[in-house]
Length: 214
Ligand SMILES: [Zn+2]
Image: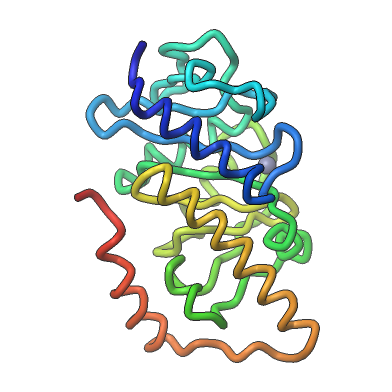
């Protein structure tokens, strides 16, 4: 079987989504790109997390051709592949509709940087405009709007995170939801105190040695 190790990693990362309360039923997906072959391993479409095994993961090339796997890849595969094609630094990607972060998406709001943890994601989590599901529009919007951030809220939709590995992007997806929840609670009681750009830059520098290819 192709990319056995990456299949195992992507499968495990997918299981982290329901475990951390980021997804319900079959929604959400994690993918990973193999640095050697450039092939991408992604969750199959509409498959339940409990029944999934590493062998169910689908291997696709960057043009969305299935290289190995009996199941159809996630409906968000085009989005993942668009980002991989345009961001050579990205080797893992996660998409969820995690509730607190997605409530910002429903309001068309970015998630402000008012917590030190925000620096792990590059500061403010930007907002991408509405884009229809299934084509390359979401991917284009992510690439155009994400900047140096590692997560983006897509209006009326949900959250995408990008990282140096599937594990990194998964960790960030959990972090985004935590930040969104705390920010939401803070906004109920007042105006959150925003970090300054200098404070963000200092902490981004601290975190960046964890990011990128080693
Ligand atoms: Zn979605």
